[in-house]
Each structure stands twice: as structure tokens, then as C-alpha cells.
Length: 190
Image 1 (cartoon, rainbow, N blue to C red):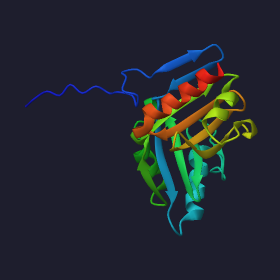
Image 2: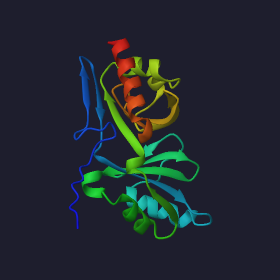
Image 3: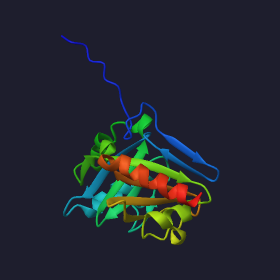
């Protein structure tokens, strides 16, 4: 039997996540988070919400918000639908963990390898986003989330710390295009 020598690569094709630093801005590919989608099953909402509160330590977030008191965070993505993120190191099997936690009240799908995550940090983030999309990140509060298009790709922008730290989730298949758009906008600002 042949021995396989498989090696994990990031969405941008590297063996390590890419980090691009400018004087007042950093764009980091983040391959350290596990991601799964969570959808409430029809007729199971009361039990589903109870399980969500138990998992997160708080209620599941409403429209346009992120919630979670520990390392596990939920991001509202649509009516009765959320992304759930957690550190990959401790939650590599996030979908299985969620399926067990919601015990039949939710449909869960592994999403870790379907999305790319870029963390953007620094005082110039607002100016960068002005060039990227129609979303006014200056109006986003910490802990909020919004869907927008960046470089013709459907993306989520998460406000981690208003005016300073944001996350962009985009389709992994468009990782290079999304990274190029982020870098082009950053260079035009800086």
C-alpha cells in the first residue's frame, strides 16, 4: 500500500497563513478557526434556543449580531440560521460537536474548508472598506455582522472592535481574488 504524504495548505495555498503588514494596517489570513452552519429545524425552536443558550452562555444572536461568552461564537446569517466559529485547535470536529449539542433540533453542516477568513486590524480599516464595498463599517458596533459583496463575492464582515478590528469571511474558491481586493484597497489608502 502506498504511503500518503498529504500536507495541509491554507486558502491562499501556503503552508502558513499569510500576513501582510502596513504602517497602520494588518491583513491576516486566519486558518485557525473552525466553522459550521447551524439551522433550526422546523417545529423545534424552543428546544433549539435553549440548547443554543447552553452552548454559548447567552442567547443566540439576533439579526446582524455576533454572540458568545467563551471561545465559541455564533454569527447570525439569516432567519433561524447561524455560523458557529471556534478555535480549530480545540474544535476541529465542530460540526459533530454541534450536532451532539443540539440533539436533533438543528441541521449542522461543516463549513471550515468552504470559507476563507481574513482579519483586518488597524486605524485605517474604515478607509480600506470604503474602497471595498458599500458597507459603512464606521456605523458597525463591536459584535455586529453584515453581509455584503466584495470583488463580486458574497462575504460577511464581522466587527470585532469598532473602528479597529474586522473579519471578512468569503468563499474559499475566491480567496485569491478577495485577498487581491483587500491588498489593492489597502495600498490605495496607505
